Image (cartoon, rainbow, N blue to C red; front, side, top):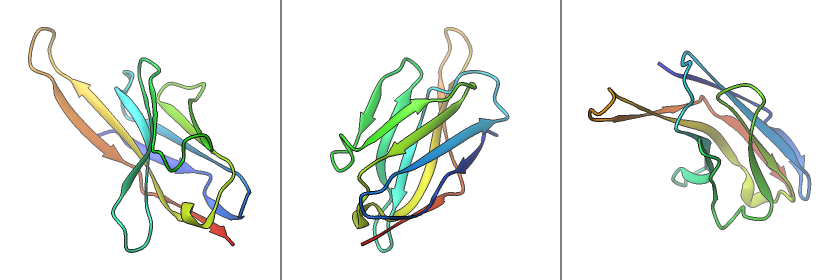
Length: 124
């Protein structure tokens, strides 16, 4: 199983910045995608940002222009630079990874993996 370990959450004031990092282990091949989701109290988990293996990035409208996802120097690592944070960004942030595997010419299977989550709290 792919194991994801997050780091970098914490408490910051409105307008501040934080950087989250996630490292995947137990998988030697490049993961199809890695990214971040978040879940605020009483709300459903929502997509924040995704980075695919070919370099495509995707952001939710709520973070576009403020957050930047990037690949780390080590394989299967990803970071999320979060700037201009506001109280609406307070949530538990989860690292996500998708693994696509299968035999050459055969059916592919997708497996999703999640980190334990890291708390981000933005004070007003």
